[in-house]
Length: 206
Ligand SMILES: NC(=O)c1ccc[n+]([C@@H]2O[C@H](COP(=O)([O-])OP(=O)(O)OC[C@H]3O[C@@H](n4cnc5c(N)ncnc54)[C@H](OP(=O)(O)O)[C@@H]3O)[C@@H](O)[C@H]2O)c1
Image 1 (cartoon, rainbow, N blue to C red):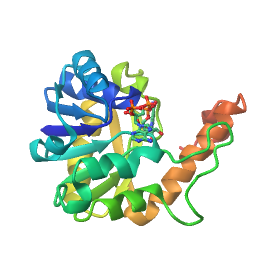
Image 2: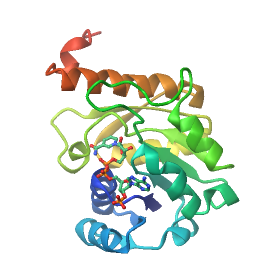
Image 3: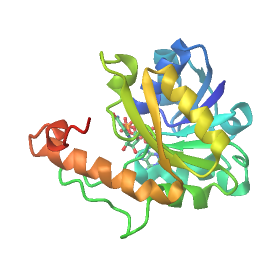
Image 4: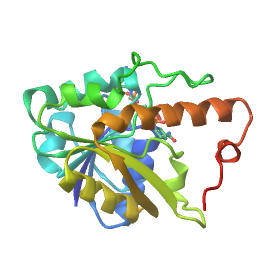
């Protein structure tokens, strides 16, 4: 698959590395040419300028800090339609670190904001719950990747990319469930910062 990655940070580099290992064709780019080159070298991906990423991708991963979402989507031409018909993976957490409170207004998901900035793209919320290291050093048990989105074909594509990095996709519903998935990340982050293993706070359901 041709995968475009917007962002050059920790998660962008980890998934670029894991998908490169799985045999995909990865393009990566961010606002800094130096950090783009470094991320490409570290992951085995191809460095590209932001306006060229979408034209060379069937699926795009948006992997930036939530404050940079509008800037990078605009630089990639998304508001002008560059992502029409493409799957757009949103792993972002608009969460106050330390306390785990969402920065979006009540009832609203950052994924909905992403969908508005990328008209025509098929947004899939996924990969926002596990630390990036999980995809480069998989554990003994496969990670369940809870995800949601409105386009069945895009959910299928992203599901196959989840399997490629050792995960198991679990679709919980349409993009209207994104707020719930984002709150789940806030819950996990809040417990982790409180020194509690989040897994110990969830009942085992056979
Ligand atoms: N790391 C993880 O384990 C993990 C796991 C799940 C989800 N996530 C989510 O994935 C996203 C990326 O996290 P990360 O850990 O990879 O972060 P990171 O290593 O700090 O990298 C952040 C990326 O966002 C860009 N960025 C930051 N502020 C920006 C702004 N105002 N305008 C434009 N670009 C900006 C950075 O560009 P510059 O380098 O140019 O500053 C960089 O490409 C976040 O939304 C995070 O919540 C991360």
